[in-house]
Length: 229
Image 1 (cartoon, one colour):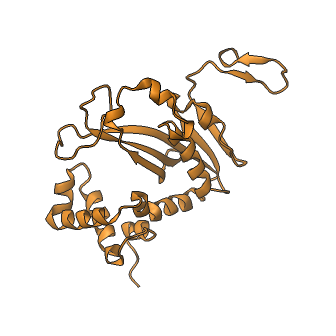
Image 2 (tube, helix red, strand yellow):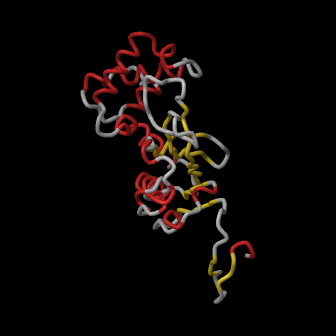
Image 3 (spheres, one colour):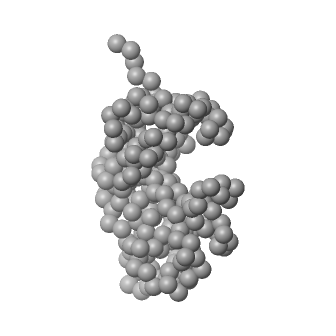
């Protein structure tokens, strides 16, 4: 029996809108991997672009359905290690030159054009990449750009910072037991809604501090400033 190629194994669990895409999706992934660093069009070629376009039009509910197989494969790889680092961060993807596709602002420029990707990459303690455990994409509302007061008045679950908590919840859903997990964040992750997320035993937070918080130190009855601890 022919052994499955890595891209076939990685995409085997994808949730597809039509089973006819079951063979084309792995081929698209393989082509993108072989031509890493090249443009989307050059990497896929004419036939690949047509196939990807048809698939994209059919994936209307959740783009993450296509990655369900990869998420599951990543979780399986994580279970081979006693400790896993789950690195999450947000990246702004700039499509300023692609004016045919209107997205949203990504910086202080109201005329900017792009989207945001919040990812969680699992790696071993020795730095071996194991794959993605979570991905969230979104576009900012151009009409709400610059409305700071309205943004601050939103409920915590409606703010962009909610992605940190949601990612922590998703990681624990995919790794409910097994390896010890360290969720690692930069200063943007220092928000109470994220820090208060319930965590299973063996799931820890390592977050770069942005706020001079008041904390209770074990064995100490008095509250102390985190900068002084």
